[in-house]
Image (tube, rainbow, N blue to C red; front, side, top):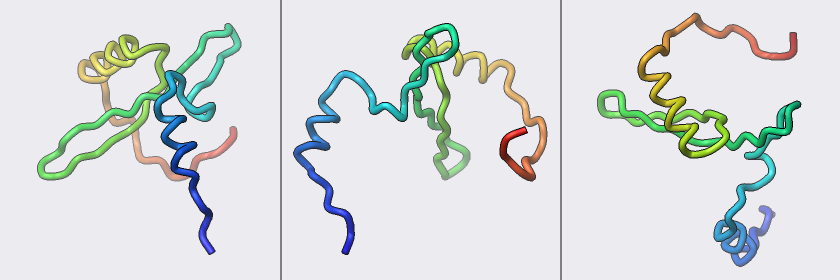
Amino acid sequence: MSDVIDLNAARERLRGDQPDAEHVAVDAHGTRWYRFTCRYVDGDSEHGFDIWATSHKDAARRMEALRATARVDGQVHAWGPM
């Protein structure tokens, strides 16, 4: 049997003005970082990725920096702790 989702609780959470805890991080300096989703269109398909920023304005500024300076550094072959 699948997990039951309480739709009323989900609606209440979505109406709140704060994101769920997994979308907020606090760094060593006490700065709160929020996850923002970004989208772009490539031909006929749409793709997305997440960035972390301190506000919507900061996220928009970071997107402008990406537009101006982003590059491909290489293909990832593994990911994990160093």
